[in-house]
Image (tube, rainbow over all chains, first blue to last red; front, side, top):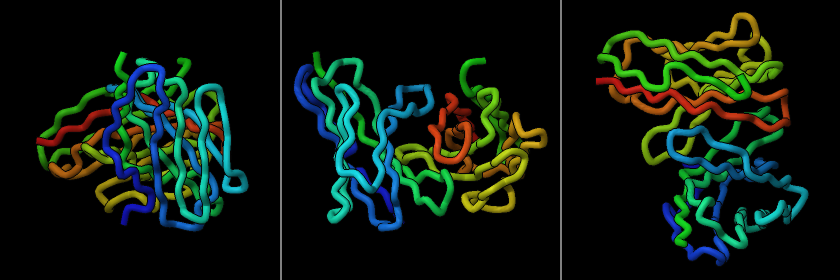
Length: 113
Length: 113
């Protein structure tokens, strides 16, 4: 049972344009959501997060939007840069489960120069 | 070191053998997590330590898997009677405590032949 889903395995975007990565979840008990970025042969690195009490969080070029009624979140990268090319994982956490994260399957982003 | 260190980076073992994977967390981090990432999947939670004790081991797939953290720092994930299905990248992460950002190591790629 995949509780966090990233339905697009890959995305290709032109440099300078917006990248939009999507994530859906099924467990309404999730109250905190995170995005991680992963380069080959490295561990995931934290990018940005959002609490379920908010609907938007922005950090520089990265913005995460949360739509609780639709159980959907998205990561926007503007403007996209070639160095953003990586695999992006959406993850979710329940307050009652401590810091255990449930990850999606990832979306591979390629930013073309 | 500055980050989470995992050794070895690669391990090839024969089916039925015993393996140990080591994780050195960031100094001072009290929380430590093990995840497993199979090909094409996101990381899956295995076990979470707070200090020396396993606060949540609900992700361990069966009794062939065991993890320890005897002094509240270094952790070892132990897999007995390895099977080909155990082949994956095993990721370790640490954090200062509940609700704080978790930092991942580069992972150990385990291949069971």
